[in-house]
Length: 186
Figure 1 (cartoon, rainbow, N blue to C red):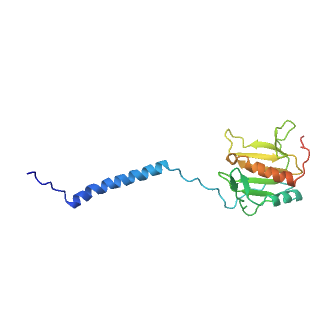
Figure 2 (figure 1 turned 90 degrees about the vertical axis):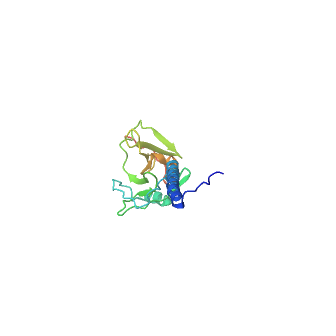
Figure 3 (figure 1 turned 135 degrees about the vertical axis):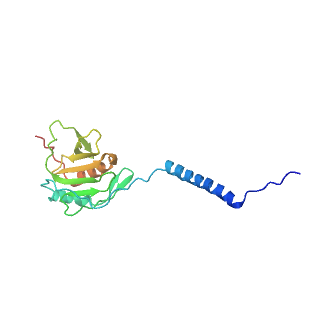
């Protein structure tokens, strides 16, 4: 007759099972964390401090009319960029929208850009002539566009990753609000 098998006492079984169970749980958490992507941070929507710059026509009727038409959210591809408030004291002629990693900023009424020459390459978007300027580094973080064929210079700075949506949306408003003028080159 075979000898009866004896089961280990319950405390011994628990002492063996708990560390094994803990190891399985820790491995599962580690695998989940390794393969899950962190959530992308949302855009900063706090008030944006915009330094004052020379903008002689910023308070003029052209800029006032343009900014009145750009007081809502801004289309950007498949997304919409919310208006970003400006910190006090806010300079005249400025609008901003929350984007990642940097905001989209529009300034109206700035002086003629020095980069505008008779041989400057211009982009035409929705009937508006834009001079494109980058931030001067090998891998630009922002790109700046200057509308050069209107009675006032309009400058739009966007993060490179924002795509062409903000420029297209602003171009339509500039075209519909400000009359076209000849490009003034020296």
